[in-house]
Image (cartoon, rainbow, N blue to C red; front, side, top):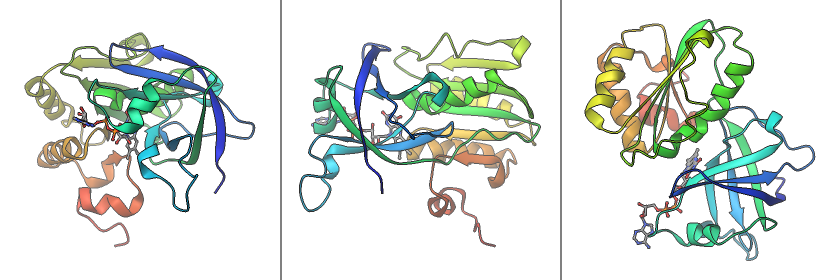
Length: 238
Ligand SMILES: Cc1cc2nc3c(=O)[nH]c(=O)nc-3n(C[C@H](O)[C@H](O)[C@H](O)COP(=O)(O)OP(=O)(O)OC[C@H]3O[C@@H](n4cnc5c(N)ncnc54)[C@H](O)[C@@H]3O)c2cc1C
């Protein structure tokens, strides 16, 4: 396993609680849209065993063409040790990234794609949308639906509907509107439905989609293949 140590080159305050840390892209480091990585702080591998309190899974919110690795996260006042260290980090400080993989690359199979997310989960989808807007080949259209009760919606210049590019986006601040729209989107029995958020959020969305007749194969989760059956209750090997 290769551990890449790299430096923070910019910190963007996306909202009052959400920050994006842009990291220098180490030579030879690349990733696919939708990738997540292991993001670790100094000292995580100092002992015999890795110190898990200094490691978090994080999506990469940028594309390689942007030439920086973006990590977008919410840091609340009451937060973990990891986030309280991160909050005090500055440009030039070092962090580590390793084990990078995308479970949710953009499917280019001439179908409609629906991106369902909660809060900072939108970060996972930012590179999918940028990739699509750069070249739309074999994707019919994309619609993003994000719920954030804080109403501090993220990445609004990118997640702005562009009907000429067959990209539409909606932000909502309450569950009623959110699930009402999910039901309507599920009228498309051929679409791909990507979901990113807490496990509880995934389960609730999957329940609504399945009730509307969406099949497990149409539902994309940022989970390892072995974890999928627990959510989609079907056996991949069968
Ligand atoms: C594949 C994958 C991709 C992911 N991508 C991202 C991503 O791009 N961005 C992202 O932010 N997360 C992402 N996550 C989740 C991430 O790994 C963390 O689990 C998440 O950010 C929570 O971080 P934390 O444990 O440091 O807790 P925090 O965010 O600090 O806290 C979680 C909750 O616990 C409360 N809390 C924590 N400590 C205390 C305390 N001492 N007292 C009172 N309340 C407390 C907080 O208020 C908060 O509500 C991803 C996870 C996976 C599996």
